[in-house]
Amino acid sequence: MDAEPLLRALPAEWRGRLTPLAGGLTNRCWRLDRPGNSYWLRLGCADPAALGIDRRLELCAHLAAAAAGLALPVRFARPEQGLLILDWQEERDWRQRTPDMTRLMGRVAALHRLPTALPVLDLRARLGHYLQRLSPLPADIARVLPLFERAELNPSFSPVFCHHDLNAANLLGGRPWLLDWEYAARGDAAFELAVIADSFGLDRPGRAAMLAAYRAGGGELSEARLAARLPWVWLLTALWAAVQYRQCGQAEYLEQQQQAVHRLCRYRNELE
Image 1 (cartoon, rainbow, N blue to C red):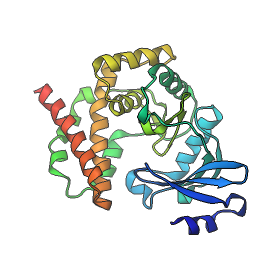
Image 2: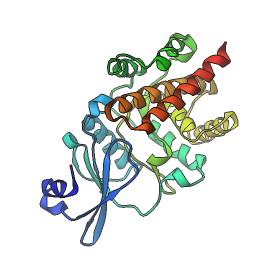
Image 3: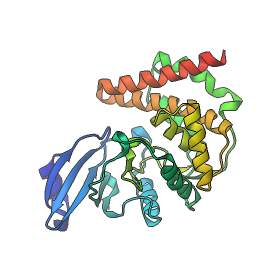
Image 4: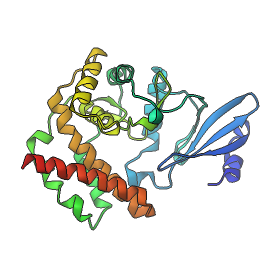
């Protein structure tokens, strides 16, 4: 939807001037300026189910996190469109800053302590969801799938409230605010931290420092469980990117798929 039709579809009290923003991979975003205030407006992608996104669950998660001071308050929402309006923040995300893991892990540990009735993220079910949409399966991904039958990559865990996509673009300002709750669910804290470690390219010492900060913030997690979840992050990233590439053909998704598969192949070679 372009800016003018979008404005006309908004309630009268939310109409103003829209300025498009760059940077989103799947959604479209604008700055919405109204007299006296500015806001961030997001319109969701056309087929969220293809990517495993439930907009109503996303909104429930965002509202719970906002009530705990971890996410920006929701000013207006229309989940059937993936439409969200939040307060505008002049602060920047973490793509151009050195990550402060002590501060971030304090926020993540606080999130993991929050009660929630969200469903549990079943990694195997998410894997099956993507595989159904990728027939025929890319050969490079098919070659690494047998890895995920290994017992050490399937540890037991107690589910906690997880964001599941805390990459640098979804961390805003010094607090930081946690953005984009599309994949929030109850899940494995180890998978949450594996996503963060992968996003920031943390090596073994970096992951150890992250774990220490998480424990200092009140979280509990072993290094072995974190190591077990990193390959799952790479696999689901490869599948997500492959679905996106099939839908739109943009080269950035193919590159993301290939990078994730490369990490998986390197991991498989280290095991052999």
